[in-house]
Image 1 (cartoon, rainbow, N blue to C red):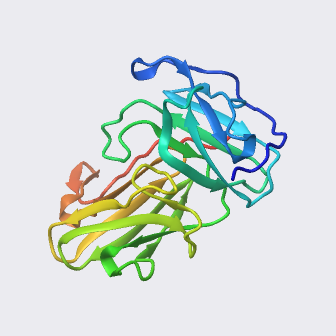
Image 2 (cartoon, rainbow, N blue to C red):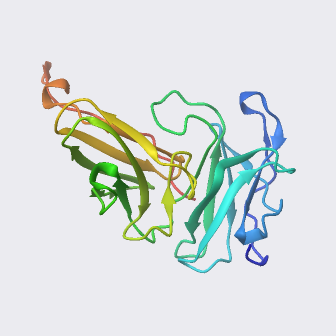
Length: 236
């Protein structure tokens, strides 16, 4: 049963999505507006569309998704789930363009500004889902990362979940009710970096390179170091 509609302030104007060959208005729909079309997404640049709602209660959870007017198109496949931030606000982002960046999902990413109300665990078949294999560390602006050494090569399933609580989770298409994410390791004791990027609506789990595979330039000489530069979008 959906929550009854309550007054919310729209901080976005209508946006006509024309990226990747489609041109129709998409809406932020959820418990907060009775799943209606009252919150059209606005083009905020760089192929990103957004809408913001206010008037919620900090920490209260709700389900949501991005969809067109007649529900023939909607992302993610199931409903996503989050909570209001300390100000009672929620900012959603939609990135329709396919991205060959190694992150998942590959296109139609639905993310949101970090509400800052909880952390994230990685749960999976590594230990029969019995306990978190790692609790991710906040890196700022909605990015969370953590490492785990997978002892035995093989294929494993995992999900991200709210720290200590299955009430909110992220699966293979970023929905709360989505399927498991699959990971395959090929060498014993392989160190895997789990990365969850809330605003961009994406995640990845990748092997951590050995020190000899990293590089940097110092004093005119080629030396060993890894450099990761990531453009972040800060919340309004």
